[in-house]
Image (tube, rainbow, N blue to C red):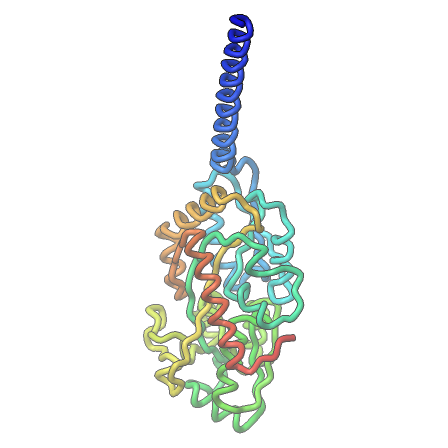
Length: 338
């Protein structure tokens, strides 16, 4: 009897020891899983990173993003290579990033067009909201109504008068862009026949505007400013509620007889869906550091751009809110999804 009791006691002790060992192993594994993203972020990056810009070089998204990429390369420890993949209103480059490995080595630099496209195109190869990890908002930028320097138009009302005398063509950085929607809003308010001409980015559109192939354009300040300062284009009005510091003599659209006309664009960074939160946070941190550099602040200011540098969580909320806002603008402009 004593041997049986002793055996049972020994078995019980072994079971308790085994249970303790299993619990210790579970805790260790859970801890390892918890710190895995942090470890990945500590080791990240160990090779060059690609920033995909879905527009040609020289456009506003390219200009704003390259400034940040150059500064991020200095602090993050690896080169950030800007890869321009223009076409299809930014969807070619965005699709490339959506399909990339979610390891932080490929990410997207895009404009507000990223959250506008879903309300313009019925069929897209990716979901702009579900297939990406928001990283940070880079900047908020007003649009400016520009015409060729040789144009007789000096005010928005002059443009209305010209539109009554002849058909007008206006350009944009591409279908579904904030530039197009500003033009469509102007068209809807005036009731004048105007033809939208989409381009693969602002740079080719501005070239045609200087050449007189189109009569006006609502463009982002970063790409339009050099043309304005060189005297090739005339700034007629800005599209935000207040005048911008870089061009204090240029009135707002509201001041020019179009109350409530308040349309701006913005730029941000996105990674593929599934990118570890620690890596997204690290990218956002270094982008924010870049946006605080004096040369970036001064160059952004010269283009009318306001640096932001939000967290991934804040940028995700901003994406959702902006999607709803632009859906309303698209509906008000009477644009039918293609």
